[in-house]
Picture (tube, one colour):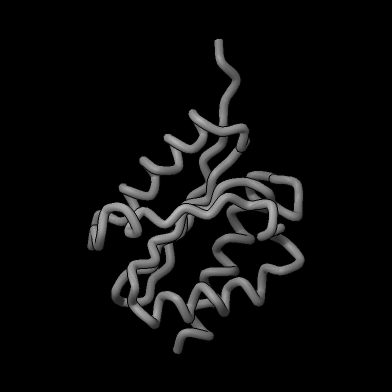
Length: 118
């Protein structure tokens, strides 16, 4: 099952990157809702296999909020968005991708981009 979830997560990430016309391979911040559950880690590992040509993992900043906050449950996507906004305000990254997997295996991905200051 993790291979199917990973493929779906990778497809969601690619769709978001293409819709936003972000230059590939992507370099920026990745915020993941990994929380110690083996199935989520396996799904993310499988997603990476499908993204190697599209995401420059060596030049991405990876943030895992659960490492600092613990399990946040259903609010993990909202927490991830907050972490992404904080990263965009404090780093030179132009964008951040927030990835979330529900307990039912649904994937959610959003891309936040830095805007020009006025």
